[in-house]
Image (cartoon, rainbow, N blue to C red; front, side, top):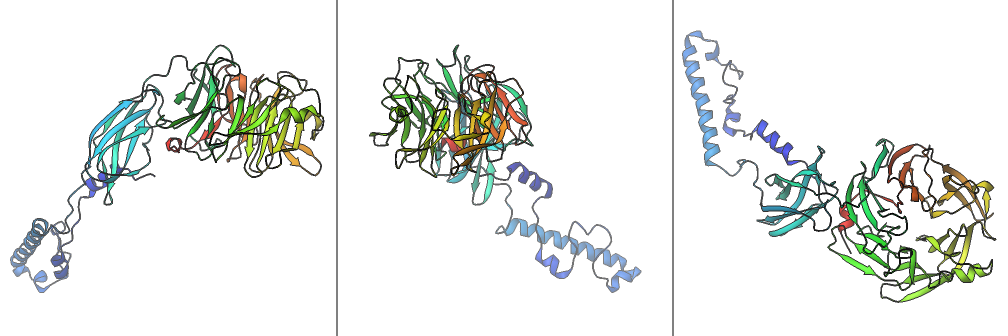
Length: 512
């Protein structure tokens, strides 16, 4: 919720001052004190044209003017029922602030309300316009608010604004400053930004490897602004991976996978958390390997395996019970001999409209779509026997990542070009169930030299642009339908995880 800036209203009041109309002056046609300084502009009388009576006219006019002044003065000081008492007084006191204990880019402000009011915090930094936290209806007493979206080492101005009985007020202006980022957190480089062509979302949620090897941690889940500056971060403990950071289905918090498939030695867990960490939950799937999806009812779908060969799609329900929904090993055994990691997925993605799951296997360059109601594979794309036809054939999948359906029902995927190492492309396919064909209708191969040996994604945005991740080459690009880069960042050769554009950071702090 946004409000008209208090500064504007105060300037207008200072320029115009309170306006008061005197009923008696209006009734008898006398001029106001402000206008009775020159020629009489009221109706003409016989005295007005009689030169000999001019002194009397002057005296009479002066008496009338004084009478108006006296009446106005009496009204101003005597009858206060309709008087303007000036700007309202802010009910805010005891203001203070501090930097968040764990995230150096978050500012926590505290204040006291002397009476119940609708209140919010307005803040400005880096010469930008004022931003606002969501307005809340609060009782009298002590309150706090966390400010999001501020880069590290940044000075800011802030104030608490209130709305009481329709009148907006502002507290005394305050100053604060965020602190430095952790020394081992990699910083991106802004490649390009064309606001006219990029989407309206102000932030990007993703993850990045911060160690010396792409798959062995440590990792950071983080949020960047459009200038490529880190405004929020979290690092899993014990060098666990975080390659699939996601937004909760209801948009009220973030999800951070904290797996140990490569690092080993620790228990994998899924972290649910608000941005300020005031509400958190850890979920522990029994035999979780790498990837997952999280459903609106609180069910977690994940890749369950104890030996690296017999993989299952397993559901962990909110009540803690687990259910194996589909066996990749049993399905693939009917096609070929199953070797280690043949079934290992790098994507599990649930489709709410069809209650199906896309299961992407990089080792065998194949994607299957599993119907959760029947437990059957209803679509198969890629290189294993039984897969659909690719049109053209050279659009075949190879070490693909993050297949997903767009809002138009097309299949989006990031893939290598078969037989041409060093070339990676984002592809969009029309899905033809009658002919079991994937027909390529759009593609983007960057000319910036980026090639992700592993990982990556291509995801259609509401704006019509496509978000392209370049995995181990560390770049994330927002691409227009014409193939122009509207925005991009690069973490110089570090693996970046799944990425999501975000338009409201405060929504990610609402919790469940």
